[in-house]
Image (spheres, one colour):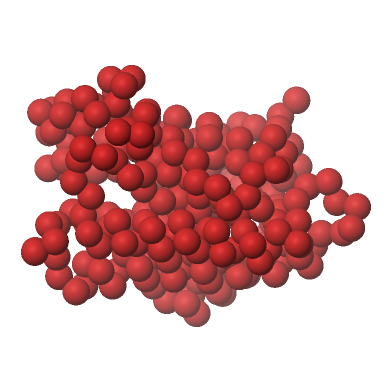
Length: 249
């Protein structure tokens, strides 16, 4: 039996890479999925691939986020699971980072996650009944802390903010039956820019994992299915590292 059968899932940032892998995994496990993403071509492609609906959204525009979220939830009929996967990472050293490099990640990740969580949680509370056996779920995707490798200061700060937001939301939404967890992927090569995907660079990154390899989108997607399913009903406020052991170095 599919673990997500009958569940309505909204994935923000689900049109490419890890996000698209999640959408495929949710759909394969029986969920009805709607997708929000930035790039129109990617949005159209994933909608056709999973025979679903997808909308283009500007995550830095609160009005656009609110209006598009409401359209997607109305299309789904209700929302059981929200996945926040805005995904932006620009690598620069502490002394080279520009103010805009700080503003954009926080606007794309922390601020947009706060807004989408508010909208989804209100809908979850409105749709649930006291006898409901499917608590609402929010999954926030943040980067893992990779010891032994550089973590840009602005990226690390944004990641920490996402994890703190996850904990705060878990406290407030728990009484409503909504769990909130953070999924922390390791290094996924296709999520990196071209300079980071050079063979020597990937080999150096792989060496940090006891498993000797980097993450694949499917590794993260399977963990997301677990967090979206009833198997994780007693997890909330947690951060799940899918980093091949890199986080323990």
